[in-house]
Image 1 (cartoon, rainbow, N blue to C red):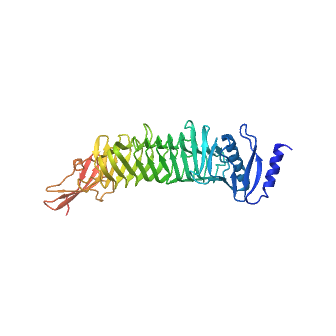
Image 2: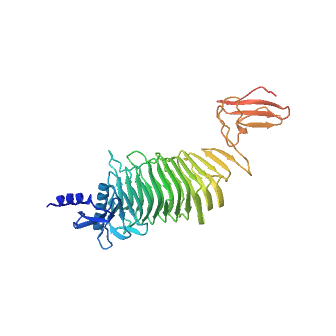
Image 3: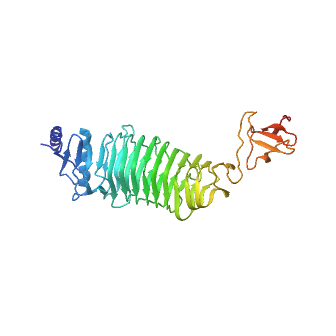
Length: 438
């Protein structure tokens, strides 16, 4: 009987196995051509990994369990223990769930280079749909050219309760859609989470809940190709750099309740020399140092950046907005032991309940100082600025400190001596003031 005939016979026999029964199949990986035992039930296939087996042997046994699960519709269980392996891949057709006995309980130690876990779909489809990975730890014997989880062209998957330790890159996410990461902790890696430029459609939406990057070189790198990402909760402490966001194809990224603690360099870098994101928001994030940090957020380039309900402790400057950066809106932020809130190309702006900047213009609501607000373009007859004074009969651009009035702006001018008012409209060549009226 040939090996293939024996496999077909065993697969057929496996159809009638009861819960807890076992079947032997042959799997080859390198020089490992021995039998692989699979414990199969109507719900679970148990990978017969062993602490004494070689890395290729354990990978072959996990692959055999994945194949059996794909055939029967069962889940794959990798039992508790620490096992050497050389990586495994989800089927390109997806539809397989792999779980361990718990992170720290099931530990897979990659003794090779490359990805510990790969989930790649085909460019023409299927896009590796509806798989899941949970309740285990991925470790590596070396960081050189290793990735914890490598995802490309996948959709509808979930990754939860997973630790990734000691890889070059923890999670490499490339063009994957409608997916969720929950309680995933990356530590002791060069890069925690990387979203690189991809030739395929940008990822959207991507949801991350309580996901961490601890003591990595860079916590998060978003290069390009993200159009909708929500990251809710996470600890990014002890990293060299917090988050670096570059690329014009990055849109609608929102980080909420992230702990930036004891970052060695800058917490957030937005934009590069020639590219930057459109629509980046930080909400209720914590920026904390135990020794004075120079700059927390460096805004280099981008279309729109919003910072709301965040707090800073022990920095020289909270936000540096360079001259090439786009609009910045800061609302209801708190500072302690912070010398400068916003440095706009050398112009210092104090923290206020509301600050909005764009180019040379600024709007600011102040409790203690002077409130500065833009007048806005509006139809004639809509009050946008009120100017009053004794003998006040005209208006000029000088009545708009720190602003550059544009055609269409309007104002009401009151002469407190006579009680008369005049309506003024900014034309392309100056202000036009109406006759006085009561």
